[in-house]
Image: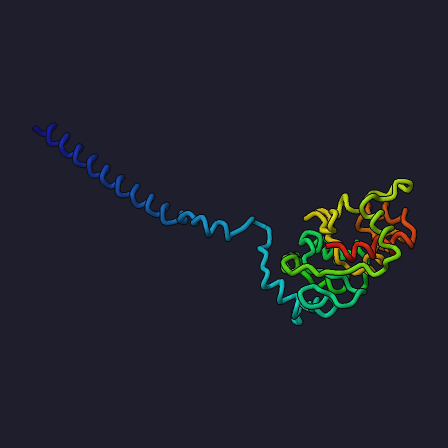
Length: 241
């Protein structure tokens, strides 16, 4: 009888421990479940974006372009490049509809000093990577600014160079990279159609003279062009659309 009583007590104790263990496990798992966040909805995950990559904001880009940010020393781009990137003066390039990747690269080059221009180097110095992406994203969405060729006497030469290059000098056709309409190729080659002829000509000279060094490909091409050829092709491109 005593032995049976001992066995019963032992069995009862084991059962009690088992119940306690179950409750303990439930409590631990409950804490673990509470600690694990609920999975993000698909829409929220999409908004989160790629880790480490700034989220593009066109509204912020427009605000910086049009108003700058006095607190950070960011000057409004509109002062020189005009409303919506449509410059009214040939000394300053038209930026509307320009591929975002190209605009962003140029701003980075100005900030790094790999593209020399005292004014733009000063402007870009205050910009963050996120600022550059926002401004570039805003500009690419703006309407394309149209232009016209001015010199009827050189249109034929300009067209010949742009579409066929100059075989005798080893100059490739501009259209091969910048497209027949001057639209360029996103993330690779800039939009040139409609750009001010004076500005395009100035850049070709800068490449040829080694003043602008952020494109070895363009440097190699520009060194083979004469002043007359540069002016002709620059004027022709102004009328492309």
